[in-house]
Length: 251
Image (cartoon, rainbow, N blue to C red; front, side):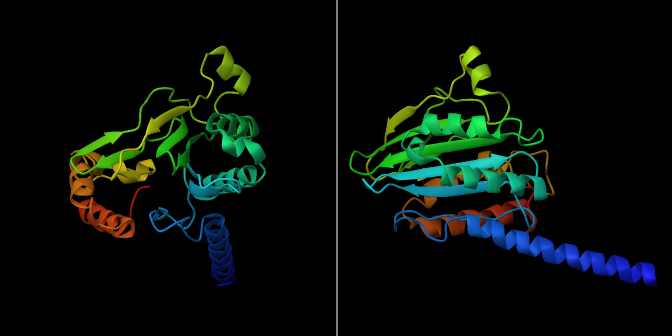
C-alpha cells in the first residue's frame, strides 16, 4: 500500500511538472500574429514538443521575420532545445536582419549542445513594400506558395543542412555554408509555413497509403484559397483529423 501511494504521489508530481513545462513552452510562442493577414496554429503531439515558431519585427521597417524549427525526437529533450533556440533568438541582435547569418549563429551555438538531436529550421524576412521574401533554409520543409490555380514550393536552391550536425567550420569545408535565397511573391497569393507533422500524417487504418501531404493537402489549399488565413488553418486541421481517423497525431 505504501509503495502504491508513493508511486501515485510521484505520478502526480510528474504530471504537475509536465503541465508547468507545457505552460512555459506555450509562453515561448507568439501570443498573436504581427498583422491580420497572418494566422498560425500550433498543436504538439504530446504535452511537450520540439516544434517552434516565432515572428520577428524590426524597429526600422515594416518587414516581418518568420522563423520555424523542428527538433528531432519528442518530449522533454526536444522541448528543452526549443527553449534554447528561443533564448538564442532573443540574443541574436543584428543577425536577425540576415537569414543566413542567423542560421550560422544558431548552428554555432547549438552544435554539440543538443545531445545528438538535430534541428531543421527556416527563417525568412518578408518585405511587404517589395513583396519579396529573403530566406535561408536549414533542412526544413519548403513552404508552399499558393496562387488561385497554382501551388508550388519555395526554391530548393541553397537548401542547407539541419542545425547542430556539423560546426560552421565543417560546413565551410564541405562548401555547405548557409546561404540566402530571394523570391518575389505574386500578388493575390498565400504562403504556407509548416513542420513535417502536417504533411507526413498517415491514415491510421491505411498507413501504407499516401500521406496527407500528397493525398489531401494540395486540393485543400486550392479550395480554401479565398478563405481568411484563420479559416484556412481551421479547415486544414479539421481535414487532417478526419484523414488521420483519430485525434491523436504522431507529430
